[in-house]
Image (cartoon, rainbow, N blue to C red; front, side, top):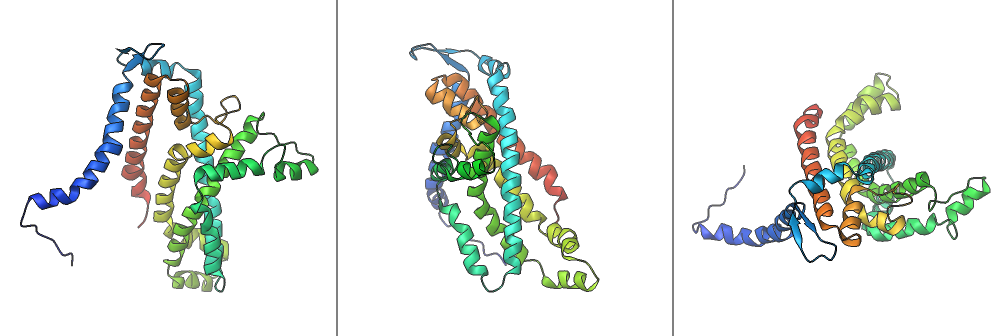
Length: 293
């Protein structure tokens, strides 16, 4: 039974909440309001004077081929990172679920990459895939494959997808292991007695019962790929070559801090914020109804 705390002083609950409310206002609400206001302004070439231009910054974005390309790149990137990281994580979690003696050591080794900062992960993979000093381009060259992500857009996309997915595999792995261990073994044993093979047991019993975990991780991974991979992109490809890895969040930074086009950057930030809200509403209002808890 839940125990309910009653405060005799009505001011005390607000004082206890004040630090969290202050942090939320300073680091979330205030910057979001600034981005909305900035999206309606346009600065002159010297950054001295700002003019209120209503929705002109938004109209220009939808007429910009570079911005439309960044949307397409973001969709491809987010789907690829989500599928790759969740697929590998589920495969490793199933392997751990079958391993008894070395499961703890195996789990510990797989969790380590999550402690690596995204920028460090990006630099690590940049060294591995470097066309001049990297080990993988050298190995691929022995098989007759020329790797150079600096000039090849597809290879650049593959590099950032691998680097971003590797960082997220550990996080997904922990949730999948916890989900697998929560499934009663008697269900799989009963299916095995009825003659169901390992593959059929996985797709008819294990995977459906993992749907709450899978749904939660899908939301987390899409948000991660769209908004938390800036450091990986910046340390590996910087959005290139030819805008091939210029995702939306990196374009916000590039237009705002490098190009000093604060109005366009603010409008892009607002669009990103609306995408997050829309994704959250769609996934929790409609997709969640198909998840069996």
